[in-house]
Length: 310
Ligand code: HEC
Image 1 (tube, rainbow, N blue to C red):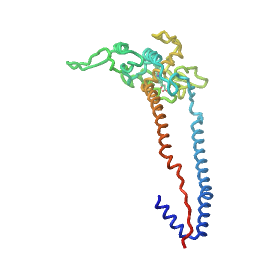
Image 2 (image 1 turned 60 degrees about the vertical axis):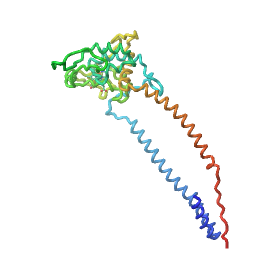
Image 3 (image 1 turned 90 degrees about the vertical axis):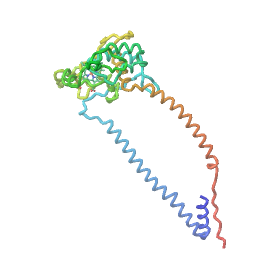
Image 4 (image 1 turned 180 degrees about the vertical axis):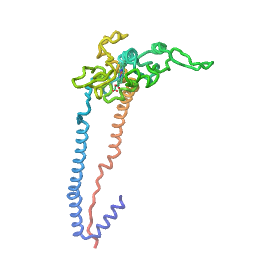
């Protein structure tokens, strides 16, 4: 830095005062007036192009295509919406009851184990009793035969069908998808599942449904091969909550949300901790930066050209 300054001042000192003034004028016009105009033009163009791009993207995102034939689900005020809201765990417990008594007749949840329920919706003893209700094929035993035994905590939820073909054969060719990750696998997540389960209605005139199809405006295309599964009092909740269709649906959606994102609560807890720690660190960093830069920021470097010596 000092070297550069020295060299510049050495050269300037050799110039005549007139040429120096001329140079200074030239620099001031170039740097401040001309350069800033071209920069302004450049930034202006970039702003226009960027802004236009954003507007175009928003337009494309919001465009409505007549081919879609889909009603978008409305956004519901879930108790777990928001940055710091946990899932409603009694709803998860009721939702498990709904899955077990209604949905599991057709849908598998093959990535869920009974041990996953422990500490979330059930105690260890309760989860063990749930597992023992199902029979699991195990083996081979010492004579090479497979055998049946009551389920254990480490067992997965049983699937209603042996394979996809069997599932399709039983459902008019439609495959009831595995529900473990369904809220993440469908656009709209639990809003969509809620709308789908409660949205059955009569097909409008002009829509012909095939045998075994039902009309649901939230399902892409409108014709779904799943009959309406949830009605008022389709089951009785063990905690005595009145089983209205909306309540049942809300609970099963919360359960499915938890199944797809079991880390939901810990994730938000971590976010809370991280935000607290990082905001503290940021203020400390800001203070240290100001502290270290004070000497540099308050320094003034003045350049005073001297007249040539002879
Ligand atoms: C009688 C069998 C049956 C029952 C009971 C049943 N479903 Fe279905 N479900 C199906 C079939 C079949 C499909 C595939 C529909 C299709 O592709 O047209 C399906 C599809 C779905 C889909 C996917 C829709 C999509 O966007 O692809 C979801 C979500 C779903 N079911 C949730 C549930 C829930 C939650 C329950 C319990 C409350 C339930 N189902 C009960 C048979 C059933």
